[in-house]
Length: 452
Image 1 (cartoon, helix red, strand yellow):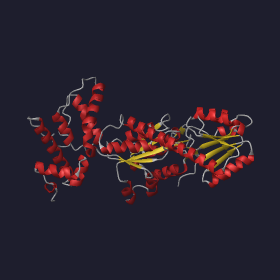
Image 2: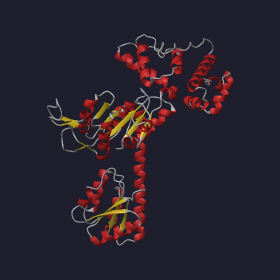
Image 3: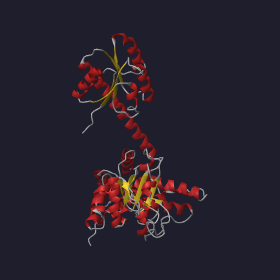
Image 4: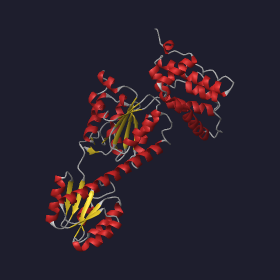
C-alpha cells in the first residue's frame, strides 16, 4: 500500500494550520503542521518526498527566507506560499525564484487541495526521475566491474543496481567460481554503506571452535586463551556489510545464533551478558540448494527463509558463452600487467576452443586459463581430461564462420543432452533460428540424448 504524501504546513496562526490539516487529511495527504519555519526546517532534506506549504509573513524566519533555504537544500522541492492581499507582488517574484505556486488568503479549499495535488505529483516525478538516473548510472558503472554483454549479465546488473542501495539482506546463489563475492562487493560498493567496512567470512574455512568468536566476539576470560576482549565481525562491520560465503558450511548450533542476530539486530559476545546493537547488512552466498539441505536436516529451515527474502542467482559461464571472449581478453590484460609480460594476441582458433569449453570452474577457471596463456602455457590443454577441440580449418571467411557456428551448436547440444530448449537459451537465439541451423548443418537433437 502506497504511503500518503507528506505535506509540511507552516503558519503561526493555529486556526489556519488546523483548516489546512483538515482539508489535506480529507484529500488523503499526510499533513505535518508547524508553527514556525525554524521548527519545520529539520524535517526537510534532498529526499523529502512531499510538499511544503508556508505562510509568507511569520515571526522569526519569514516564508520568503524559508523558501530560499529550501531551494538551497533542494531546488526541486515544491513550495506553495500562502499570502495576504498585500503580498501578491512579492509572491509572484518568489515564483520566479523557485516557488511552485501561491494562494491568496482566504483561499478556496478545493483550489488549495488542487494546488497541493499538482505539487505532489511534480515531486513524485522528480524523485522517480532521480531514481531512474541513479539506477542507470549505477548500471553503467557496474558494466566496468561485472563484465559481459550477454542477456543474463544485463539482467544481473539491473538487479544489483536496483538492490544495492537498500538495507535488505541478500542471498546469492551460484556455482563455484561464478563470482559470488564480486557480486556481494558490488552490492556494498554501490550502496550508501560503501564508506564502511566490507567484512568477508568464509564459513567453510573457519574452525568450528573459532567461528562463533569470529562472528560475535568474546569478552576476556570467555574461554581458555581469551586473554582480552575481542570485537566480532558483525560489530566491527558497523554501518557496512558482512558477507558470509559458503553459508551452507556453518555449524548447526551457530545457525541458531545467526538467526537471532538477523531477527533482533543484536549480538551477544561469548562470556558476556550484554547485547550489542549492530548496524550491518548481511549478504550470504551458497553453491548448494539450501531448501533441499533444510529438507534433509543439514540446514535450519527457519534460517533459510530468513536469508531468502531476496535472492540473486548468478548465471554459470556455460549460460553466457558470448561473454567468454570479452572476459578472457580482460583477464589476459590483467595477467600480462601483473607478470610484466606483453599482451599476446588471441587468435580465432583459441577463441573457438574457449567458446566450446565446458567451464565447470566458471569465471575462476577462465581467469586461470588466461594466466597460463600469458605465461606461454597451453590455456586449455587437458583441463577437464580432454584435449581442446580441433582448430578452425583454413579457407574463406564464410566457411570458417560456419565451421565455428556448427561447432558451437554441437557443443551446446552435447552439454544439454539434446535438450533444444536449453540449447537455445544457452546460445540466446530464437527456437526457429536454431532449428534452421540444425537443418543447415545436418544436426538432430535426438542424436545427443543418452540411451543409458
